[in-house]
Every structure is written in structure tokens, then in C-alpha cells.
Image (cartoon, rainbow, N blue to C red; front, side, top):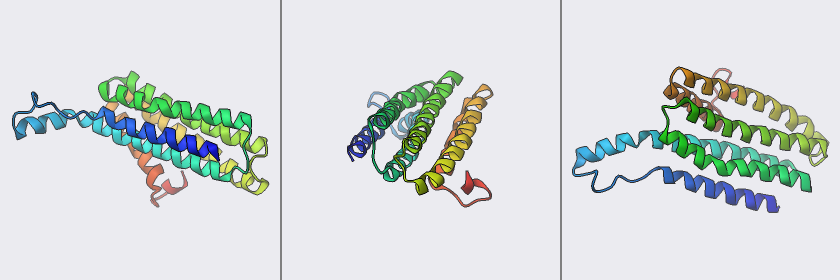
Length: 196
């Protein structure tokens, strides 16, 4: 399917662009090992946001690949919905760079969360449309649609609460987002977390 090809390409480029937020300290900044250590410590917000965004894109790539594997066929409207989803994928490197540069600003955290919200919302719209347009088999529709709705509602609620924590401390908010992502990326079999 051609949609798979463009999707993989855009995700690959976006994930590669993320690394551009990690800038190697210049020789003028680093004279000895102590200077290098301090320069690397200053780079930590960039490293954390890089890791966080790589997880974000990985989670949504897996979700989209799963969805595309379930779709028996596509139509023009479904393709445009998926292209809209990919549009928001291309914004992730910008959201990452903004958050890395202004990680102490609640506005940067909210902008990053909004990017995640748009990815989740459009992904859910795509599944809803695929079900309504009968692009999914009836059996898969009955399983996939409730699962996607539940996951989108829970995930977006958790991300929204994590973003709201930025009112108190943006570092707590960022840590909460990373923990949510680790839950979805690793799907730990802890307590109730595997059901989220």
C-alpha cells in the first residue's frame, strides 16, 4: 500500500530530525574533561526531550502500522485523514526543539502536549472513518474500534493531566509524559497498567 510507504518515510525523517536538537559542544566551550561534563549536563533537557519524542513517534508509528494492517482497502477520504495525521508527525521535531529550548515554560509543555493531542485525535478519527466507511472487516471493526476509543480516551486524559502539572513544575510534567510513554511503549504487566 502506498500509504505505508509515505508513512514510513515521514516517520523516518521526523525521527531522524529529532537528533538535530542534540548539538555537540564546540571546542571553544570545552577545554578539559570538566568543561565537557558541564556542557553535557547543559544538554540534558535536549536529551530528555529527544528520548521523549522518539518514544512519541514510535508509539504513533506502531499504532498507525497496526491500523494500516487492519484496513482492507483505502479511499480518498481515508488517505487525506492519514495525510493530516502525517502532517502532525512532521511537527514533532519542532515541538521537541521548542520544549528543549524552553523546558521551564509551561507554554512549551502545553504546545508539546497539543501536538500529541492532535496525533491521537486524528489517529482516532482515521479508525472511526475506516469503520464507518467499511474499510475494516466487520469482525475487526468490532474488536478494533472499542479498543482504539478506550486507549485514545485514557491516553489523552493522562497526557492532559501530565501537561496540567506544568502549572506547578514543568520538570514534573515532562517526567509524567515520559512515564506515560514508557507505559505505552513497553506495555508493562504491572497492576492495571497493561490495560491502559
